[in-house]
Length: 177
Image (cartoon, rainbow, N blue to C red; front, side, top):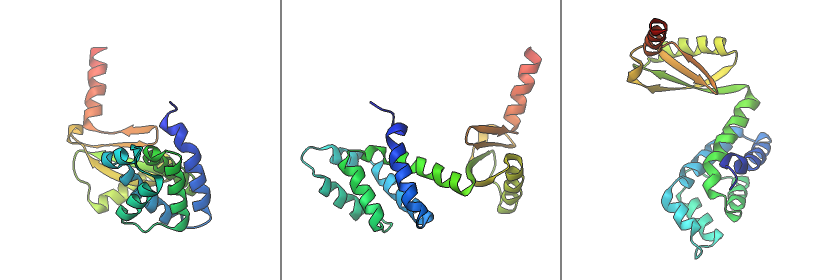
C-alpha cells in the first residue's frame, strides 16, 4: 500500500490551489476540523462498513463538524469519501498546512521548554528565533521538564538545542572521549 504522504499529496495540492483563490485561513480551519473528526476510530469503523454508503458518511461528518463547511470544502470532503481516503484526511491537513506556510513564507516551530514561558518572554524568543532561522515562525510551546532548563526549538528538520540537558550531554561526551 502506498504511504499516507503519497496518497495525501494530490488532495492537499488541489485543496491549496482552491484555497489560494479564496480565504486560506478559513480553509485551514475547516480542514483541521475535518481531520480531527476523521481521526476518530469509531468514525473510521463506520465508514469502512460495507453496509454504509458514502452519503451516510458525509451526512454524519457534516452533522458532527462544528466549523461551517463552505461548498468547495463539502465537494472536497465528498471526493475524499468517495475515493475511500477518509483515513488520509489528517495527513492531507498536515500537507495543506505545509503548502500554506510555504506560500506565506512562514514555518511552524515548536519550542520545548522546561518551564512555562510568559508572553513577554515568548515575544522576545520569537523575535530572536525569526532572526536565527531567517523566516517568520508560527510558534507553539510545549513543556518538557526533562530539559532541566533552557529551550529546544524544532523548525521542520532543523533543531536548535540550548537546554541544560543538551549541554550536560555534550560535557559527558567530551569527558568520555
